[in-house]
Every structure is written in C-alpha cells, then in structure tokens.
Image 1 (cartoon, rainbow, N blue to C red):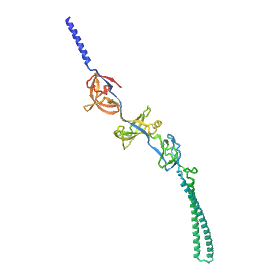
Image 2 (cartoon, rainbow, N blue to C red):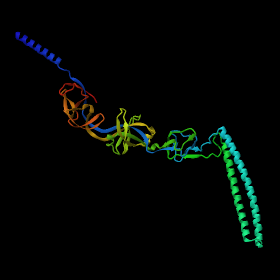
Image 3 (cartoon, rainbow, N blue to C red):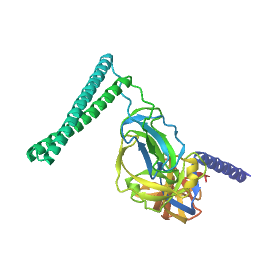
Image 4 (spheres, one colour):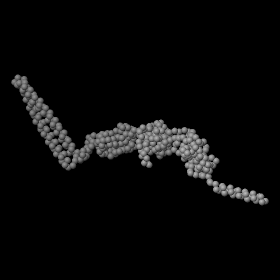
Length: 400
C-alpha cells in the first residue's frame, strides 16, 4: 500500500515537472511563409513613359504680317494641302496730328511737282515739233542742194535731242504721278486701319494628314516670321518614349516585347522596342540625385487601338521583358537574406526554421530565380525577423 502511494506521488511530481517545463518552453515564433514553386518567370524593367509622335509638324508664319483668325481647333482633322490659316500684310501705322499734317503737305508738294512735270512735257513737245519742222525744211533744201550736209546733220541732231527730251519729260510725269499716289496713300491710310479692298492674302497649308494637336494662336493680330501657329500630326504614328536608366538601357534591344499598363484602363497593351537612342542625358531625380538616362522608343503592336485611347503626351507604364521562361524555380525576394556573404533562406522543416544557403539567378521585381538549394514544394519564410534563427520553432502562416 505504501509502495502504491509512493508511485502515485512520484507520478504526480513528474506530471507537475513536465507541465512546468512545458510552460517555461518558448512559444513557436509566428512567421509568414510561402511554398516554393516552379512556373513562368519574366525578368523585366519597369519605367514610366510618355506617348509621342514619330513625326509632328509645327506650322509657323513664313513671313511677318497680320494673322487672320484661326478657325481650326485642337482635335480637328486636316488633310495634306488644306489651308490652315491665312495672313495679310501689316496694316499701315496710325499717324499723329503732326505726321498727318506733314502727309497732307507732302501730297500737295507731289501734286505741284506733277503739274511742273506736265508743263515741262508740253514745252518739250512744242520744241520737238519745231525741231521736226526745221528738219523737214532743211531736208528739202538739202535735196535742192541749197544747204550743206553739215547743216542737214545738225538739224537731224537737234530733232533727235528734242525727241529724247520729250521721252524724259513723259517719264518725269509718270514719276510725279506715282509720287502723288504714294502721298495720297499715306494720307488716306493714316489711322491704322486695314484696307479691305483687294487685300492680298497668304494661304498657309498643312504639310501632312492628321489632326491639329495644339493651337498656339487663335485670334487675329500681328505675327512675326517663324512664330508657331499650329501643331499637326498623325496619330497613326503614335509611339511611347521611355527614359530608362543607362544600366537598364544597355540590356534592352530592338524587337524586345513591352507590356504597356498604367494608362487608365484594365487592358494590357502590347508593344515592341523600336530603337534605343545612342545618346543619353542627365536627369535629376525627385531625391536630387543625378541619373543618366537613355531614351527608348516603343511602337504599339496595334496602333489603331492605341490611337482610340491616347493622344500625345499621355502617361503610361512600360514593362520591358528582358528574359522569360515557363519553368523557373522562384521565391519571393523578401525571403532572401545575406549570411556570411552568401544568399540564404529559412526553410520550415519539422516545425523549425532551418537556414539554407541558395544560389540565385535573375531577379524581377518581387520575385527571384533560384538555381540551387531549394526544391519545389518546400516552405520558406518570407520577411524573417530577428526572432527567427536556425533551429527555432516556428508557426508558419502560408500566403499565396
């Protein structure tokens, strides 16, 4: 009987000690985990881009003049050779009171010079008629051998000089008449008004089919030579320009596939790299860091579809597919950490975290290719904290 009591008390003591030991043992560390899988993997580079046209045209004023109102608006279709705006010569500048009075006096002086020129013409015409009569008389006398040949030549010379004087006087009358017309124009157009009658117009035509992209000038007024009026382009030439970091641009080649997202719709558009420009430029990032960037031009695979949604200067997100495969072992990048200068992960085995060295391959965003060290179906810890160590008990929560 005493032996049984001793055994019972011993059993109770063992249970109590076991319970105490269990209570004092550390609880498993809760961790997030995921299953190692093999599937499609694509190494990509993502960057923001802007839509642009391969060829756009800025229609400018070819000469200085007066621009008439531009009727076309942004978005209006145009055809090659269509008149897009018209120009007229500059209107005459307005004159002040003193200038107008001087203009009237100039007109009066021009009219007086015209009358003087007409009087001179009448005098020269009379002298010419007299010289012609003298010449005819001397010719008859010369035919009758009553005057010498020298006198005959002298009469002919006087006649010819008088004829020349008449022509000069006629031209002087024409010049004086033009001066009167010029002086009259200064007096008549002295208020800055445009002359409506017989005003010559210069028609400027579109160099291409397409749409009006932007209207720089709409209202009529004075315009200088080379000043832009309209931008014209064809949305069938729509492209995307993406400024990549130079370290990423060196991995991009013409013909690579590009996924275009982030444009406001749910559909992913397809594109193809057309050209990587050979010259880069320096751009200051939002953090104030100088970045060397290279423009990359991307063509839409279905430009007609893109033209229905996009215009010029629309923001998109471009994802360049540098490499892809359908059977790649991969884990979330957040599961990797550096240990002794090598990449490692924590694998969950028998309820404990087991540190394991791995060899990584390509990386794309939040996913990394695993070349050695893991097998499909194993469970790895993602975002391991400072409580996770090799051999520690863990309570994994699987995430997709």
